[in-house]
Image (cartoon, rainbow, N blue to C red):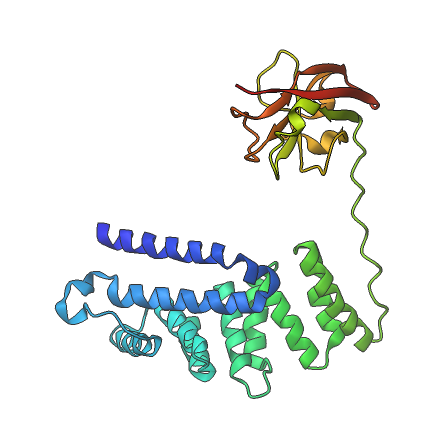
Length: 339
C-alpha cells in the first residue's frame, strides 16, 4: 500500500511539473497544450495501471510497456480481465485519442459512460470523442444527449456548455447556441471572453439578432494620493568607479521603522542626474502602501550586482526624510561607498 501511494504521488508530481513547464504552450497555443497534456496523462495513467499496482510484484507483470501502443495492448488485456474499471476505460480512450484512433477512443469512452453515466466531465469528454470520430466532426444525437445530461447535473460545466453550443450551431440552431454560450461570459477570464464573444456574435448574426453590446471597459486604476519626486545625483569622485550595467535603487522606508522597504523603484540610468517618481504603484505590499506614511525616509543606492540587498562596494546616499504628500520632493546625493 505504501509503495502504491508513493508511485501515485510521484506520477502526479511529474504531471504537475510538466504542466508548469508547458505554461507558454498553454498561453500561446491552448489546443496544443491540451493535446500534449492529455497525451501525458494517458501515458502516465497507463504506466501506473500496468506497472504501479500490487500485481506488478508478479515477475510476469514487471516489464513496463516500451511504447504507447504496447501500453494500450496491455491495458486492453487488463480491462478484458476486469471490465469494471471506469478510469481504465477513460485512460484507454485518451491513449487511443493520443494515437489518432478516434473511433477506438469513442468506443472506450462509451464503456466508461456505461459505468459512470452521471459524471459531467466524463460525459463531456465522451461527447467530444464522438465528434472527433465522426468523418465530418459533427456531434450526433447521442453526443448531444450526453452534453445535455452533463448540464442537467452541473449547469456551469464549461466544456459541456461550449460543446453543446457548437452542436447546436452545427444543427442550424444558432439562437439556441447563443443562449447556451452567453452564460459562459460570466465564468471565463477576459482573454477567453473576448474570443467567446466573437463566436457568440457570429451565431447571433446567423440567428438574425443584433451583436452583443461592447464589453464594458475595466475601471481605470485610482490615482495615487501621493507622488514623491526624487532628484538623484552621483558624486563626481565616484563617477570614474561607476560599474558598467549597474542598477540604481530608490528606496522608501518608514522613518525609524524596520529596514524592510515600503516602496522601491529599480533603474539602469544612462547617466546622472536623474529624476524618479514614487507612487503607491511602487509599494511592495497592498496592505502597506506608500500613502499610508506621514513621513518617508528616502535613499538611493548603486548596485553592481543588481541585487536589492546592500553589499560591500555599493554606492549609496545618506537617507533623507520628507513629509509625504501629493507633491513631495527630495534631493539625494550618492556620495559614499558601502563598507
